[in-house]
Length: 438
Image (cartoon, rainbow, N blue to C red; front, side, top):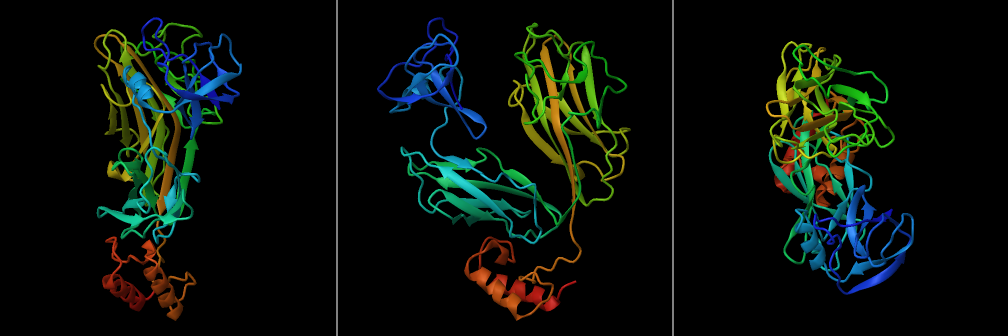
């Protein structure tokens, strides 16, 4: 998918990127009405990335155009950063099979990694690393190469089960830079052996959540479950790829004003039905949230809050506060979540509550929630880490299998979990072997 449109920097007659030497390539491009010099956006990995410049101006949609690929990047950087954007270049790190929802407590689960290198700044051979924290700090393991651009990462066995595992991928570039995925922070996944509960609320039906709690006092912008009508502050589309419906704060009319039905005069809440987590050892609640408070008479003055309760909503504990300024306050669907046990007990009366407000001076405040997922996991009581062959019997073949893994620096053989393969791992394996299986 390719689209070209004007690059609007707010100055009349200056909506294009400056000219430079380039190599025109013929592409079938869907273009918005615009001028020669407008940026070309290519959809890659679910995101639109500026990749070139339209060299033939257009006056209508759905036409062919000549797309010019810059031979350099300086003009792109200048044009994007001049209007407050972030210019990203270099290595792309992808996960073609997606990220795992759960990994085994005995280790061995794999993650597929692919890279798209930049010829201008090649990757340092052998620099791909898998950084994993199973509870005692990050350890790093070399990625196993499958080809020049494809790799496999293997999760080690954590010391505890269930537990939260943090991880990220890194590659070094010839320029000295290091590229990570994600770009900041780390991914998170639960390590366990069985799924007890996996409920997804995509809100295409009305089950699961209710708008309003005692004490809500917003006069407009009350939570509603709708196919949202987009504005500069509210989403046009829900978050679910195959869906249309989400919970948002108020619904305006097509072509209506920015703040036609945003939150005004107080607080509005969206609360879940009771969630029974009493039969699971560990549980996470994840969701996609939308929040915008950066426009209107008093921008960046309000917050969006997430709470959880383990006593049917009699008492709530604050989980997350978004705002009043910074990341996540100018719209856009953001996926996040939390470990329920870090805040409340895993009872049969858990509720989650999303609260948005417009307090004090009026501003344009909009919020949205979609794709709430409740995942409960547990650990098998009969896990035997020394049973390397997985046949339920401890014998010489498990010793051979361990030694093979040890010699290959397989993370499954890192019995001490310190990121090194040494005699202490052998001792730890032999202790587990001699202790027998439960």
